[in-house]
Image (cartoon, rainbow over all chains, first blue to last red; front, side, top):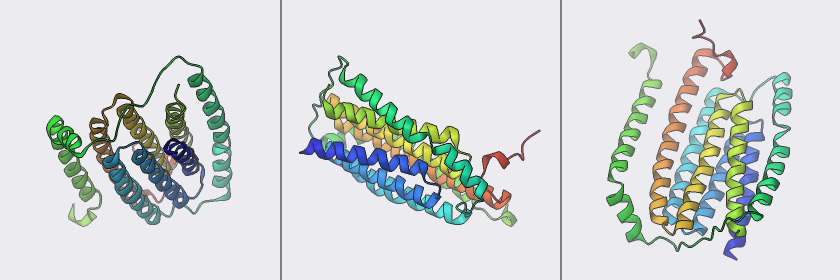
Length: 165
Length: 102
C-alpha cells in the first residue's frame, strides 16, 4: 500500500512539474511548482525521510512560492501580446511528447536491465539524524550560515533605494 | 529491478528533462528560475533515494537540508535581481537585456 502511494505521488509530481513548465501564466506556474514540491514532500515522508520532508514542505512549498508570487506581482509579467502567446504555445507544444517518449524509454531500459536496486532503509531515528547533522557535517552548517548571511546581504543591496547608494 | 526504484529514477530524470527543456526554450527570467527549482527537486529526490537504497537516510537528509538552504538563497537572490531588472528595463525578457553589449 505504501509503494502504491509513493508511485501515485511520483506520477502526480511529474504532472505538476510539467504543468509548471507549460503554463503561460507565471502565477499558475508558481502554484504548480508548489504542488510538485508538496507531492515531493509526501514522497520523502513515505520513504522515511521525515525531517527532509518537513523542510521541503515548509520551505520549498511555502517560502519559495511566496517569493515567486511576490516577484510575479511586482513585475506584471503575465500581461503579454498575442505574438508572445503564439511563441509560448510553439515552444511548449513538443514537451509532452518528449516526456512521454523519454519516460517510456527509461522504464523499458530500467525494467530490462540487470541492476538490482532494492530499498533497504528503515526510517532514520532522531539520534542518527542529530549525529549526522551536528557531528559529521559541522563544517557544512557553518557554510550554510555564511550562505544565508550572503543572501541576506545581497537582498539588502538589491532593494536599496538609489538615493542611499 | 524493483518497480518503485525504477519509477523513482524515471520520475527524477523526467523532471530534470522538463527543467532543462524549459531552461533552453524560454526567454522569461522568472520561468528560468522555476526551471532550475524543478531540476533541483529532482536532485533532492535522487539524494533521498540514494540514502534509501544504502540504508543511511540520516546522512542523506542532511544533504537535502543543505540543498534546500541553497535553493532558497538562489530563489530569493534571483527574485531580487529580476525585480531590479524590471524596475530598470520594464521587462524580464532576456533578449532585451543588452545593456552590457559592446
